Length: 402
Image 1 (cartoon, rainbow, N blue to C red):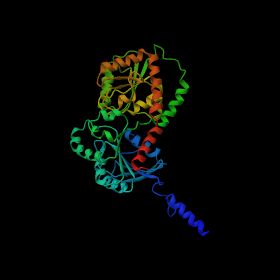
Image 2: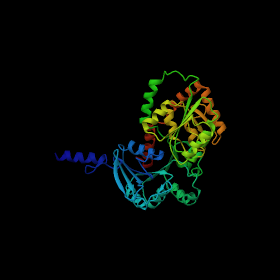
Image 3: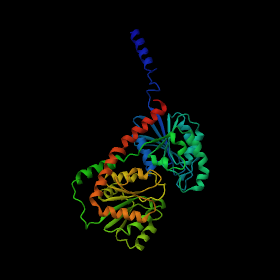
Image 4: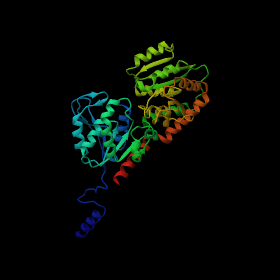
């Protein structure tokens, strides 16, 4: 009996287990994700943070640190993920102001193997520098700060220090590196990991595609439906879209969203005499949005500056087999849907070029449908959540030599 205990102790020691505990190599990696906000706030960056947190929670010990838009700090569990929201003094522009966040990061990052930050997030960068954390720092660079030039004068020195400290920088496309004013000195740290389409959207798209794959082409007298989805803000290019659309024949335009330019855009549609062909829906539910994706013919992303760094809605429309008209921004946008393959790409702020592309889609139904099929195939091959999660986890493991 004694010899059995000795043999067992030797075996446990050999594989690295003492006192019934797993060795560090066999424990789950401790990951802390850091962002300004989190679900139920549903911006594009927040969606990616949630996908990583929920997708890797079974393979890691995952926690999330974000700011609360109110003074009170809150700890809660969302879909199995532990989320701490640091109380703030409110929002300055679209950025939370929170001293508690700095102290919470220092506390929560102390034992983390990986701390992943989603940028741009100035307070996050500063907190990361002050935290003194010893874990590996991963940054997901979602976009440059473009319009807030005064903010950048203050933020840029902090950002540089933080990027120097970072062990790896994730970008969704090569275009994020090539088009960035700030990333080129850190290109050697950059890893391209494409975003993934929401699995729920892809599942419904698959079901819809199966039902309609033998559907006849649109008849010539049926208007072609163009779809825009996004906030009505300057960089989305909605004014250019309306200017272009007034020249397009046999078509209608559905604009989903809301924002500070909504009244101006509706007045512009009236002044162009196209108010009977442009439908403003306001914000819609997820189920309604998927219906619009299913029933449109072409998706349009007319953004005019690189604040539009990727356009997740592109891959959602492409999952439904829809071709995309996007713009040739110095960002990831034209890397998502490819010109003359899965859609058409025009120059930003070129209303004439956009009108020509839209009219081409109207006049070439067979080519349009083939582009949509290739768009759907591109999503299947390149923009899958499972692939995104595997690549993120592999990066974590390489950094920690796990």
